[in-house]
Length: 565
Image (tube, rainbow, N blue to C red):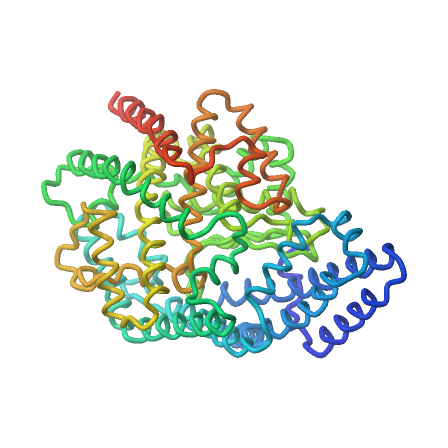
């Protein structure tokens, strides 16, 4: 079914409660293991159905945050989703207590029951009001950022659209655009700080009401992290500080020299080459046509998948007024359909986002017939391996998107993949500080961010941008507001994607088969078990980060020589 034909349907709370009650009674009164299995399968169908309705509403709202119908539907979802979760928990409790639990574990896997037990550690009816408030605040943040109307060169632009001017080859254009971008954030700083403060406090309240010292362990459990903790993450961040930050500092010095800047400010690093960054050689429609050719040549399954996405209008890629910023992939179980959301603005990031989100969507497509809903997708850090690795597997086709600048794109992209790691770790350490000190003021949080910037990105100079000098760049990062502790997942995945890149450089076909194997496992195993089963290195083990960075630093040098001719 085409996306536009998927009906907008707000879930009916009374109906869902009644259906869940019937299924719970069915499971409790099961006379044999077959009856119990049937009850669980019916519950899965209900779960998929409800999640489909919620997902369609969220997609439509993010596509047009100013549409009154979509806004009201999203507000309703924010209000009722914790209540729905409560009804579902009643059924899941019956699963844990079922006299046929052994048979259910044999049929559906022990991980499902671990996930359910984990879910009960982070949910109770008494925190429903806080969950509703959290949803409301995140939607408020997204709508506020999406409301930006920046007047520049005769255009009215949103935050995504002004982004292309912030990487212009003309320095004055970069500065003018950045003044508009950060000017909007500065004008709304008090409100944005207030929203975040409320989010931190409501999350801390939830955690404490359920017996946790603070939100950190609670937040990890909400993300489904059953096989690593904050201590392991801290050790991993230390690898990045020790091994990666100095190398990225070298890359920034080389970039400044390449550009001819003796004292570059932060905006100058947005320009990678003196003559301008590589740009796609056509509009979004051209990118989709090129991607279609690429995915048909890459693999038979990837070709069929991309046809499915195009034929059913399951991608919305252009930035437009009222559209939420950023990019994502989500999955609509009823139609076994992934959906890709992006904000193309004519920069190389359009190709990054397309290949990245296609990696997510391809995994969703390959796992569309998995019956257990929680197994259809892995936890977030594993999801990001799927997407970030796809960015690298697309390299051989970059001439389709960038023409003669394909090699320049690859160097720019690979440099960005390595350079991202310090920033990702900075976001994570900042969030640990925030939730360890929930009573900190907005200014104290910003002061901490500023201090961390000097550790993770010591090359940054903010020039005359007082807003950024005061440590407020973090406010633009949606993940900090929406999904605490998610951002480190991108870095973990990047390290593993770089391992795929190292293997791809030696034997592309072998690496791609290994990649497909990972995708098809979906969420049947926790993160570190997936890594082990796919014979990837555990990024938490000291020394494993630098093992994938060093070979790619050599690749960067080779690409640079190729460009220089």
